Image 1: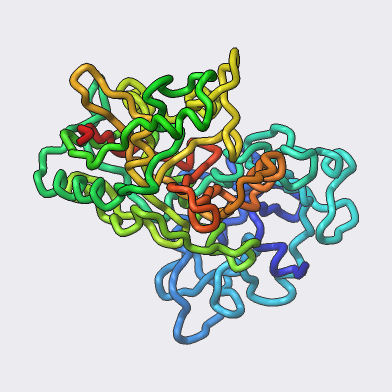
Image 2 (image 1 turned 180 degrees about the vertical axis):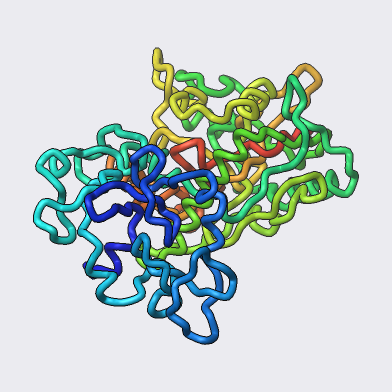
Length: 442
């Protein structure tokens, strides 16, 4: 690893290993003695002003403080000269580069390595410590290996950073509910078009989860042949009755952090496997609800809008506090006798549908024969496309937990001729319950 690459990391220390302010050109100790911080509020607020355009004159004169006529500054604290090539995260010269001590590889340590060499630790204690690399976490890594995260949630959140893409939905939240009914007729018409386009017409639009006219859904006495011989009819169409947008600021903030982290991973040149875009049936609806405060879909990270069918009560609870992954499997339509959870094909996660017909299988009518379902934002990132019925759930979960993939697309349509595809994510930060659609089956 080159000295340039090493020094571009997150920790900066002075000559004696003390943590110093991360503002280029400052060099003062951080206010709390910890790395990756500032010496004062003034430095914190002015930090962005050092990221300015390269000077046309190529001057190497120091700049205190930085101003728009100066270039990107040398990475060494206290130097203040422009970087040698005008780019950020670089030194002004080899002497400056070589005066920076090699820093311990343990995230958040900041001490010099014991032997002065790169890619090493300051002590045996740091070498043998296997803690999450997310600053401030401190939990053991998920696999006991160094330089890993403790959970997928920590990996998605990553180091704290400012949201780079999105602004929150700026609508006041009510004291009791974050749901606001949509009154714009053009928006409602757009939602009706969404249901019409994503409806699956016969003949191949029924699954066992729709139910049997004799035994209903989930009866262990109902065989596959019985269900196939006594199919519950599939609705011919779905009519929008009401649409509500969820203005839950806390859920939006968590989702944006996760989405921006996934986006950065997807766009990284070193991403392995590389990001590959996946189109779903709802992909054309990128600006749905924009007139009532919804943000457009973001490119480059497989962000989709997907359906999730359930009861009205569950829709409201999810809009308030998001999906609970620990409940995954409890809503499965087919469970073994005495079991509280089913065995989902792709493991325990949050299952989403690209077609309204599939999501409707799990919707529960109220007393007025109206059904509800969620339309969620989902960030799929690097998606593991599975086309087989033979799924090694343990291997799949390892691929997700280790960060190899961010989601699963269960595609039993292209090779097996089944009616529907499903998307599965395994952390609720990747999902934003954005709309509740109330509709009538026709």
